[in-house]
Length: 342
Image (spheres, rainbow, N blue to C red):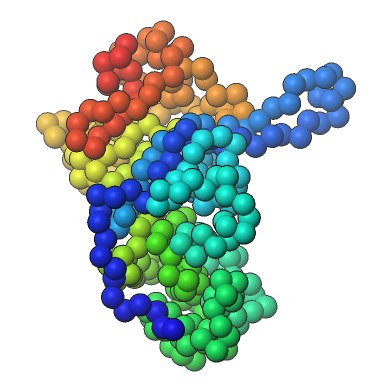
């Protein structure tokens, strides 16, 4: 059984991943003093109420500062973390409550490409073993595994001679190709690309991005592409979700987001790119004051309030948590001042 050579027909109007009210809270183990004083347990609100729909065949970019919850959100969607609350539906099926055996079968349809192409590969296994392991777990006969591994190596641009070599014998870009081959070996529908090029040289980044796009077109893949590089996300994404302190604060088609960013946080992020121009407004660098609040004790109202530079902000912003509001076709923003909910 070889790897499919032709992309399946994809209806991009159909949702593949539907996330509603997703929360991922991590408890903090109290220290001895806190236990002695009887203090209430604390939690990290890593993801704190996210709604997101990803349609078949599209790429949704997920951007935001380090520590805002991007990778945690992705891992919660894949159920590598068991969500604290909320719903995740994959192809119409609720997966947060699936038993382990059913979830293991579903993993062939949901895969991840990790950020570090060296740390994510077992240094004691050959390339054939690394790529072949997911196939073995999914019950592919041993007689077929080698053929499928070789087919995947060809798809990612590596020679058959790579089969018996170990990760340390490859460059960073080649190791990421091995990671991509491992993720795609089981023919998934949905792939999380968790900063897949951030650890690579700029010249190699372009090659890997082009490879991912070629594979998407060939295999009909759906991507959630996580990155902090706005230049990269503008190139690969159909839509972009901007995340801040565990929440999505803006979601829009890529062209619309770059042309007319609405949330003050999005404007600040885009202002760091010298080439970005906005409709009717001169380019200006927006420097944000301070650091994001701690996710251990997030603000009651808008989480961006302490760093917001809009003159319109007031007590409503400080006390009332804004929801995503439709501002046009496919464009949503969570900001009282912009959405007119003050």
